[in-house]
Image (cartoon, rainbow, N blue to C red; front, side):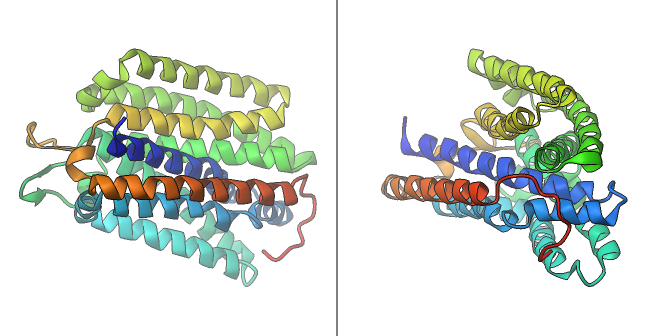
Length: 331
């Protein structure tokens, strides 16, 4: 395996870890719009208060890796998704502001926090959907606008990521709470699990219609095998939610994110960018990569950094383990 390929799949690992860890934070945030009782919303916020900012380290590391290892890709993505990336940056900043300001007016800030928490995975999914489907780009640059990015297939992918994070967040809430709130969240976990499974099927069908090059890759033995594993794990999680196996249900929804991200990366390999207007215009991971020396030198350091981040993350989760039953707290 060459270093560009190694970095490509290491990038998949970083993004998968971000969605697995921060995904339930975003899901909890979106669920605030559905939880009517203020004390229950406070409890939900307290389940993610000690960990949410640390979870974003994975996203920062992933973005830094793209910039360092594929500088030409970074430039291409910024020119293509300029407004979408700025929108995502604003949403992430506003999310942090929401944590700090919600005590000033919880009714208002909980609604805003829920909206932002829902928009972040939607926008991430739309960007990913465009990369899978292809974008109207050629040697002269991107031919479109922000609205161009919100085509049917990217929206399907965006909704899939949105529903998956809410399902994941509800599983986390069931795992961390008790009583009536836990039962309410268990109901939401099952509903959004069902929506996630439906959108997953639509995503695969849509890939065949709108992204045939990616779909061909998906139909290889490894792609089909991984798709089957994800479907079986998803169906099993619905059964576990109904049975009340809260810990295992959360672990499965956690594992689903890196598996799905790896499958998406696998279907995209070796092309980061494909054009919907010029079939001959493709940008592979090797075309856009930094020098072999840079790829080699930084890979080892990045793996060590990822191990440190994982160790710290697990330590924090152990320190703040157990059920959350009190509404009092910093947030």
